[in-house]
Length: 102
Image 1 (tube, rainbow, N blue to C red):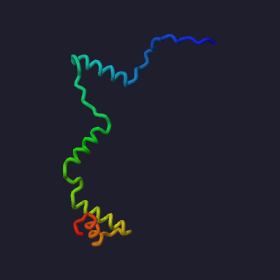
Image 2: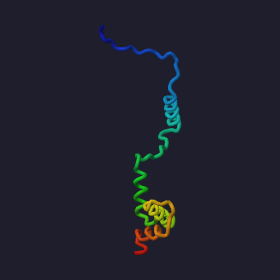
Image 3: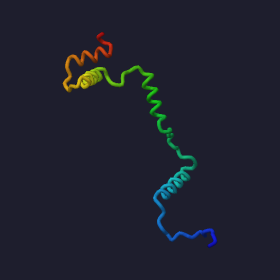
């Protein structure tokens, strides 16, 4: 059987997909505004995150405040000692690691 090109047919009145309708509406509002509509600037994924990281690195402030970090450190020392209860030796170890008490 020979290969033939398909002929274009008129649509039978079926509904257009919602995305096409939205795009047409967007184009209509753009043309009504009389030129270019203000399109919000959108950065590529990860650009803003990298900018935030650089900003945080430049500032000298701590991300986690000192006391909560001390508590977390002591809890990690307790877990390292295969315990759940934080004891004074855990606090001493965490301070020694930080270099507060040599």
